[in-house]
Image 1: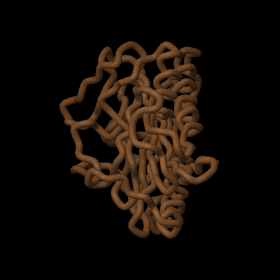
Image 2 (image 1 turned 120 degrees about the vertical axis):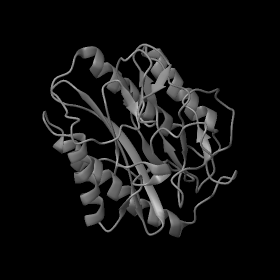
Image 3 (image 1 turned 90 degrees about the vertical axis):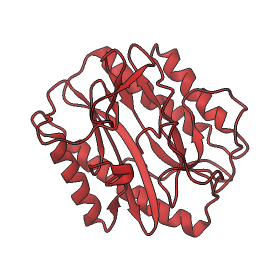
Image 4 (image 1 turned 135 degrees about the horizontal axis):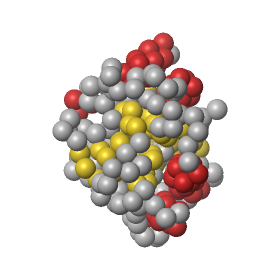
Length: 263
């Protein structure tokens, strides 16, 4: 969920290793979350409000027998964070906030079922966008894929962070380093924190049974961000475009498994 800020406490200072039974519950929650994001992404079109997208997401998740993870969390009012253009994360759905042709729309959502969460996000284009904007989305999504490739038992969190940093900065974009990925399970935010900037070979070691929500973010012109008066919405410091992608991943004894795989 939504770019876990450094100032928020995560779980209880320990990394929780999940049992096969718990992983089974998380796989189901992740599947529902991914289906909800697919469903919402297909509804993006000029004229739809972010409130309507949030309603669609909430209805879909409930239809699947789950609950929207974000609703009420830390007081957040929506079923999902929906952020447009310069809005990096935490965009509050609003009845009068309409999507326009050429916008990019980040949807960040979670599903809670049987006591466990699944969490993911993606940035979508509404119609045709400029080549540089396409590059922003492509580089940020590729950074997520690069980090997931590092999710191998024996590696360290810094290997994920460094992979993200290398891809995004190598693409000419900036990383808003105040916001992090995180562990996930019974709580939406658990340890460890997963920075989007870091040194390979540093940080907690990856162990089978660890479950991680990895979420690279990229700004167009500065790493700085601002929080709007609603005290939630985070925007690119110069008012230019931002992108955000996320998956929930399980560390195994072999290849990593994406629990929120989009189909």
